[in-house]
Image (cartoon, rainbow, N blue to C red):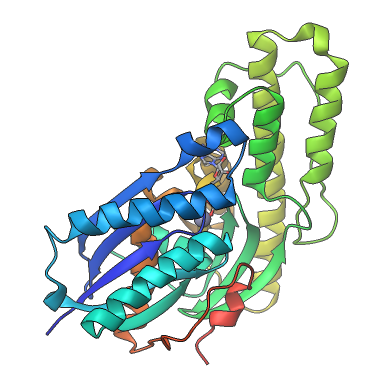
Length: 343
Ligand code: KG4
Ligand code: ZN
């Protein structure tokens, strides 16, 4: 009986394919990052991303054929939303081609469901339900309550920039190459506490806003043009990272209390998305979870940022439930995760 799933991720600037079995064994995984191509543009250049996905995914597929027999494959999953539409069209087009050619089932996967599953990769025990997720990536910042697999409710989200975007834009102001998040974390290690920039928005309940904070960093840097030296830059990084982290902890406290007031016995908290690679943020959310007696799950570093193994994990869960898609589906650039709820 064929029991493997091929998964394709191409929603942003990583071209990735993984193969995972129905028992969640990783058979194959490969990613080609496009970061170097986009650096010159200070962010992801969509047209270039689509063209590069078309090229890189072919390279990975050719390699994959040395390791995987198509006869063992039951289904093909692909990120169908949300993301840059050109990249999604390329990934889904390739997935559909394989399905047509070899008579396989298709599984469209929501990118955020993939991030939610990233905490289960290479773990003996998968996170239990119900669980509350803080998803912090380059494209998203939201609280998702999962009552069971495929039963999601978005409790709050950013009103403007995502956390990753805030890190990237602040990084750009400091002269760092894209993506700014990892550089800010690195520089923050040598920073001091002598500067005060401001704080991200604390109003609006479970919703976030980082655009005002980004502007206050910009104004602060303009005002202190004369002070720019390595120690100053490191301290701006530390300050920005600490204020963002505090905001995430504050909002997470509200979200946990909100869920508990709904009468849900919340025991599991998930921190995922590219920003979940940040050690300060992990440590601070861990302290909050300890205080609240809740178990924290976060992905291993390698699976925090975009990868196809997380898409495969979501895909395998759907495959094991016989939840297949129609080959006529179309990718979409924006759609809430609650749209993929299993009804
Ligand atoms: O999940 P991801 O790979 O792509 C999206 O789905 O958006 O997230 C990428 C984001 C970028 O904004 C990047 O700056 C941020 O994650 N990021 C970090 C760190 N590593 C990646 N932000 C803060 N600290 C990090 N260590
Ligand atoms: Zn992502």
